[in-house]
Image 1 (cartoon, helix red, strand yellow):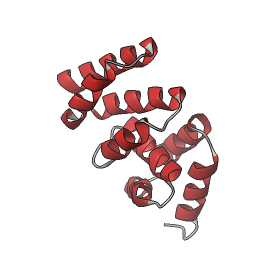
Image 2 (cartoon, helix red, strand yellow):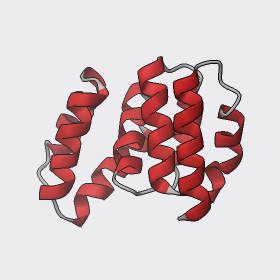
Image 3 (cartoon, helix red, strand yellow):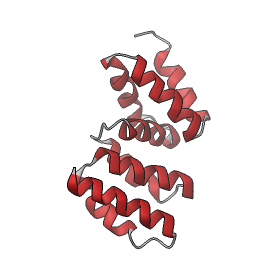
Image 4 (tube, one colour):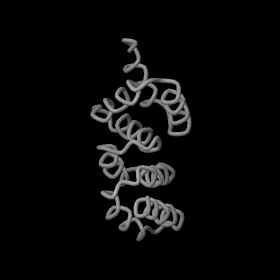
Length: 128
């Protein structure tokens, strides 16, 4: 509930890449209270696409779906390969049935690694 928490988290997600940002955000979720998830969820409507995507990744990796899956799907086409891998992995962690058609489409990717991660994520969505 600190007044600088949201701006600090926003700046951090905007300026860091997934590895560092993800680790720090996980730590924040582990050490924080129920307001921490709400804080990160508020960043899903941030005007900066990178902040929205990073927040959606953090929430999805934590297992919180909701509107995060839409942001992940929207960000996929513009993402680099490593971020695409993280997006597919995150969609699997949410195990949201709404991601099934998106993941099935990803089975046609040209990159074998992306197809493999999409298949694993699809299995998580189907059998969770």
